[in-house]
Image (cartoon, rainbow, N blue to C red; front, side, top):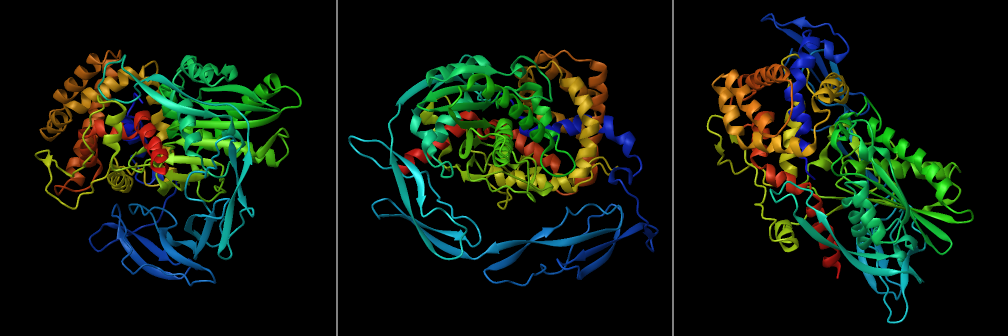
Length: 631
């Protein structure tokens, strides 16, 4: 991985927010984009009218809330009448509840949930594979990797189910269908460099094993295949450079390798990707490998969300790849051949792969890709951040996302902004992850992540036994807290997507200027050096010694070999110091409180474990574990 970028938006905000937003937010109403008439309370404080409505507009509660206070709904959860085959569960409000700075109305939201229906899955010989509960009104979902049919003298490929899967309106039974297949298959292994911050030598490599099979591209694309997924993860993991990805493609006999120019540049608004192809009979498989490692300033574009709808940058990047794909197909695919598409990606590229897969599907449906069938799109992604608009179409069963629930990246951007994934998600976390890592390489030694809430006066572990013990759960709490707190006392909070977009549009130009030309080896070196003395830095804030704070940060910058304008660094650190001091004075009135500051301190204290959770090495052993458990 070589970059703990999951903490980047918080850190970047602390470094740059005051520079870019304080002056523009001196008027408390400026960031909201609208003004509101308020009434003074009996004490002279302004108040705003906050209304809470049910789904049908019925008034549930109305309050006069002091300016800057966080409104709270005090009633019991709103309800929605049931319908035939469906119930409704309250899922919150139509927007995030923000600090009171104008009159506001919140309307109850409900999830429409179909009743549970049992679906039976049989093998070809009639033996029961499994029975699982599915939701009325949706397509049934087989919960495991594609079933196999074995024979001593013949090979078979799983082709799907009989009858064809249909929207559920009653209990049903489906039987596996296989087809005899002839094609190439073999096992191979390759060494790859370390992607995570394990603190190991730079020349350290790990050997990974994979199985290649032509049959992967002829199976049912709507049923996940864990062996195919591991091969896809291999291609994604070797895609840190165009030279490295070609090593993997050569191993599986893919030719006509073409890589985008973005491998050789360091711009924030770009995407690096590689195309390659392999002829199998009358077909050509085209691999579309999008870079998800060592992508330098591309990282910044992860945070360009747009104000509404799908993630803005992921949408734009998928269109760039699609346009180049059309040129590739024209130049390299022989006439008369049908085309199968193999898409894969990790982290940032996993999200973009989902968007690209959706875009390809839509254009096939429109008749723009007549050599590709929708059943010939095979998409596998790993640790994808969200980005699909939850209000749009997202049910693309040929997009298979493998996610570790204790990795923070799949939780960013937050679901509160209205984001989800395209396709179906498979949970890969296993409580034995550390034993699995050590079995891959004994040098991978890391303690389990055991977060605790911080007493900021001593930085000692809390005895609070209610603190969550898993990274994913802890990070969700931290996001909720960070999004609900006014960041600079000037209403530059990130509580909803519009305010976030206003904030980041100010931050981005400065971030590009500061980070342009940095290598991520240096950024990671700086991050780990700072994290190593996080207690010292926060104690300096407590002692109000801003000059000593700056000097400590400057030492880390120099030690990392980063050339920087130290006048700008001094200004930025003064702003960081003021922000941290504001947090301590305004938001840490009690110890062991979940807040951005003690949450960040906790997570930085466990930085090695955080990085481990979002690493190629961890994902490889977790996906391999799915395969081994099925044997």
